[in-house]
Image (tube, rainbow, N blue to C red; front, side, top):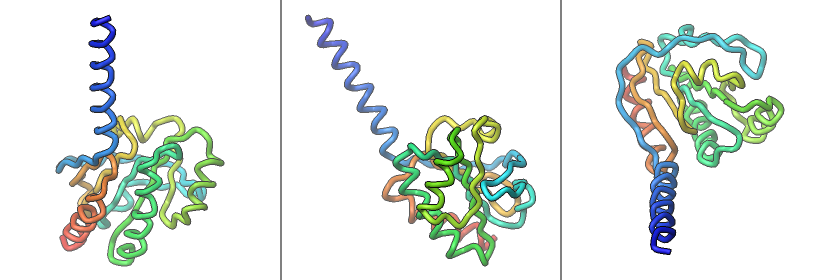
Length: 169
């Protein structure tokens, strides 16, 4: 009986740690070249990351089943509307297999930025994506400046600060 209780306690602790990992956003500063790729957008246009040099790029990896993604995407849409004319680009890489679900969610959220379906994981694997959402903030020089995992209450202010600083460079 004690062995079962000990196993249950360990399982509960591990579960709480994992829930905490999902619930709280993490970020780190990076400085490496963003891996280039070309992928067809949901609108049918070929998008090549390197063609966005000279602009700040939010490269967001998301899924339709991801609750934090559903909070984050409207925020990125807001940022895109606010800063696109001064050099911000937002690219949303979706990992779902079902393109109709991706299209439906994109339309329901009225996303104005490019949605890039990645059902085979080509781009996701290139960026070693391990959790949803994951976001790379890329400077005008093509260097990865920040990496974010998750989306918490402090993220909007953090993104705004990072974007404004990078746009000034």
